[in-house]
Image (cartoon, rainbow, N blue to C red; front, side, top):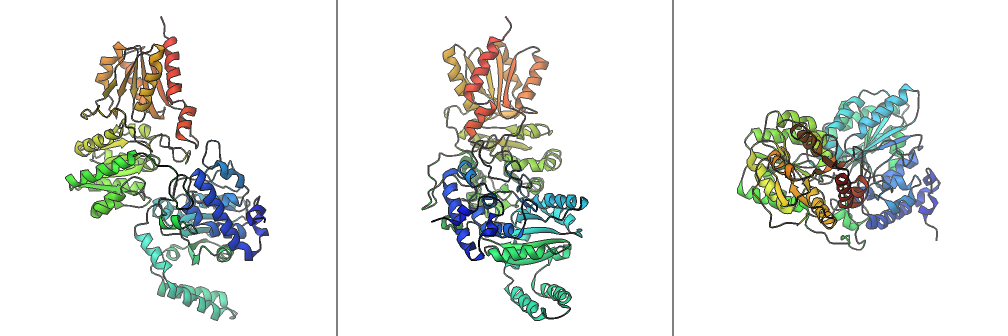
Length: 620
């Protein structure tokens, strides 16, 4: 029997489906998403929660003429299905495959490339102003989650949107979560609005009683404002000058469609407050929305991962933080809506008074940490590399300029794989190296994480520890030397080539050494350990003993580790050959991390070949 989803092959086909079949279509979409994401991995819970919401938007709007901007964009899978990209789900988040986020290069129905939170209102407002300046009439809709409303950029956009005298729809997808549970005043405010049943019931009665009045619209407006003043705490959005509609059941397709149609008639910014449930329709995702926010391939029957995983760097960080907190009551932990992702869930459970989740607000997290440090505490800010870059100014001005002892635990550093350009953590060496007083270090293996955290908490100045996503390398367990500021660690000794490797690239350097040894090339492997300041004493001692220096980093070349080392060598050893191994200065697409390393030229085979070529080109 033909499925309803088989009848949706291009944009607008959903409008051919009879309303009485919307629920059946929603069920088919959920089944499709679960089936495919269980194979490829991806953002499941957020997409299951927005099926009916997306259907309602597509029914009310005329795409691609009208525009939808998805905040973050991790909830756009149904949107992709309804715009003719069903076949793309076989390659979801794979190399050269369909992105897990909106991409203008994929479809003219994707209005803005997204991946980070809280920017949809600003981007939508820009499209609105562009529309008006060109005399357009298309509808612009920004879809933002309540989690993203914890980010300051969203309020900057709201503040400007309040001045509009033209239509702009902001759909607030309220599912009570970001990745971790939401926190803060906006979370509490929306909770109260969500539960204002007295207001909703009374409002409906007022509307019904005034419908037949010749002055109904004016009376409804006044009655609405009066009732909100009585029953809705704060009236935050209305007081900003933004019309508020809702709350609306986000799992009712027709209710969403009607709300969007009503909102189109309002000549100002309007918020449509839609309540959904993350993971809706799949019990494991409903019970564990954080785990299914971004999931690996899993068994549909029970939701469990299809393959076991080794201990990761995040797991090691999690354990070490608890031990350090046991030893020192001044140790506190801060995260930006990523308690699970950065490994602080256990810390939160054991030390709730010393754990702070500030929401999706990295800038605030950093300055908050600076205040804690100034107050005598030892704050550790745990954050993904890609998100820390949003707080550059605060790192520079509030932490480093004052030389405050804040520890930055930078997770997901380097190539992270399937999330693609917006999530690759390949710029932190570069932007952190530009800031005075900042020390940057990286562990070679899982024991190195522990050693560097202990050192960082005793250092007394700004310091960043950078480690990759995934399984922690367990090589060289016997090599665990004392951590000293700016000092490297000799891993293997050789005579021809000095491999000066940073963090995750030490493992690669060992593989390069093993590949070159049978070719008659002997390599010394050094764990740089400190990227800034790097070990100039070691270089001064070792360079005369070798024919070539190779720097290795999982960071872009521009402003990175290799550039700084090469500049020092040029000044102190003029003419000495240096081969910098780094990621080219480009945005790196999605794909398996090992495949991406090969594509950008930092895998062991490619590096070994480049070293061999460099030696052959040496002048006699």
